[in-house]
Length: 211
Image 1: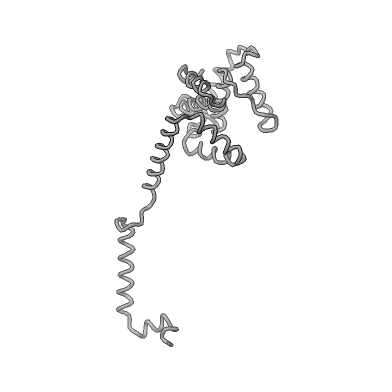
Image 2: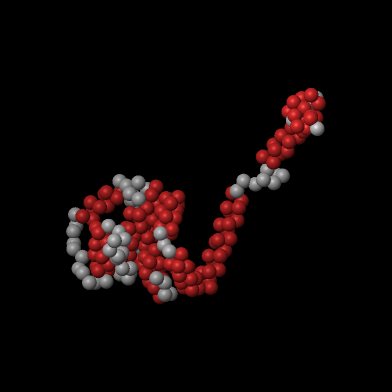
């Protein structure tokens, strides 16, 4: 069951006019944190996200199930069941043996499927499957619903991220150790050329010797 504060965050998103997928993102985030804390695992990032989306639908968030053909029929039926249960269109069956069995299975699954690297590898292909018009529309809606304070906080976070990435890049200035070694190598090469006899230079560069 999701925590009360997570449900309240999702309701606050709804009051602010945010999309159902954004509201469901609060419960997906909670599920990711549960995996990172070691409460249970997940077979893949997709499974971790699917668990969070199922919890969101059961909690009453109006996130409709995926359309036919986009996912497996079993996944779509499970999402439809959770959605109908959350919208009070269906009375969920009480199966006392199933929930503990599922919990035991999830505890045996790996925890590294919810790391930042694993989620990033999942998000990049998922973003490429969306059309540019869809990504643009989502970005415009996000900018509208985020509000002034949210946009300001996001811009500050982005600036900090750019600064951190820039500092992690390998510097090439004079203060870097590689720059010192490179200058030393150039000086050594110049000294070696100066110490060579004209015969050796001519052997290295026959065109210059002929001139």
